[in-house]
Length: 140
Image (cartoon, rainbow, N blue to C red; front, top):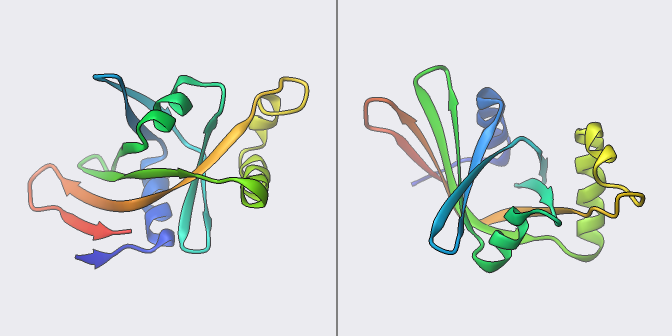
């Protein structure tokens, strides 16, 4: 299996504009749009609200899948296990996410008390799929 770099992954995500992230809540799949991400070295960092159900779902079961459609006929399927940042790394990634998407500062700030949780994927694979197979599968 070929390897996809963090930059190539971010470029593909940019083509899709918005990814939809699927988690599980008990035995029920849950899906939602997510757009916050950036590159830190060879990892893509994502952010979600610590006060949201999605955070509780990932804390209980860190397996997730993203999907995004681009070029009208291709989609990216990104699967892995969410590993949340902590300590100084979390603080640095939170600040970078807020710089990347400044409108988030209205949601995540001392006045609201809302915490932005950042994570990267481990045991991840990316699949670029056309409506007609075969697709291409990459290790991340």
